[in-house]
Image 1 (tube, helix red, strand yellow):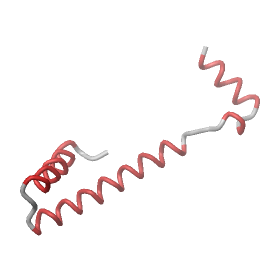
Image 2 (tube, helix red, strand yellow):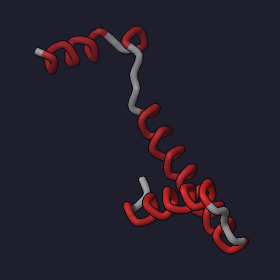
Image 3 (cartoon, one colour):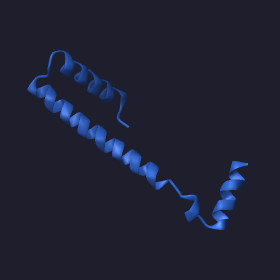
Image 4 (tube, one colour):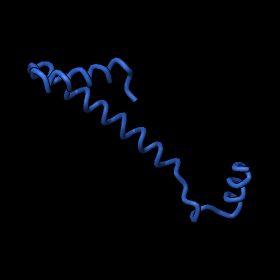
Length: 71
């Protein structure tokens, strides 16, 4: 994910937008930070999806190995 500083800045800009509004420069910064956040989120999500294996798609050997690891 994003660094803590960038996440804090996204949250700050969101609060400020609700309370008092943003300048044009801040809106542009918010847009760029949100795009970066969404890109990182998608990368991480795709990585999680790639690691998912469906039990019915596994061979008997792979199933046996999984059961062995669980015990």
